[in-house]
Image 1 (cartoon, helix red, strand yellow):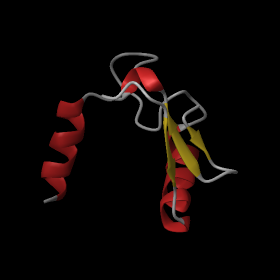
Image 2 (cartoon, rainbow, N blue to C red):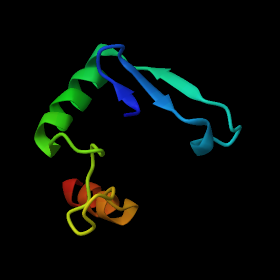
Image 3 (cartoon, helix red, strand yellow):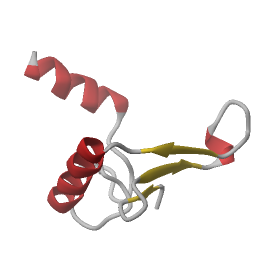
Length: 72
């Protein structure tokens, strides 16, 4: 899991960064609260934004953009 709620950090593995170095992002209290609430809503799966069409996969960028567009 990349988000550690206890340590309030988001650890991005080296393979996902341009510099190929691991990156640890400290999360402020508000971000931790939002991610914790989101995790409770989306289940205990691998992704905070799971796909409804691809079991076990993340939500697509297009789905997220469409949802944001509907929000205005």
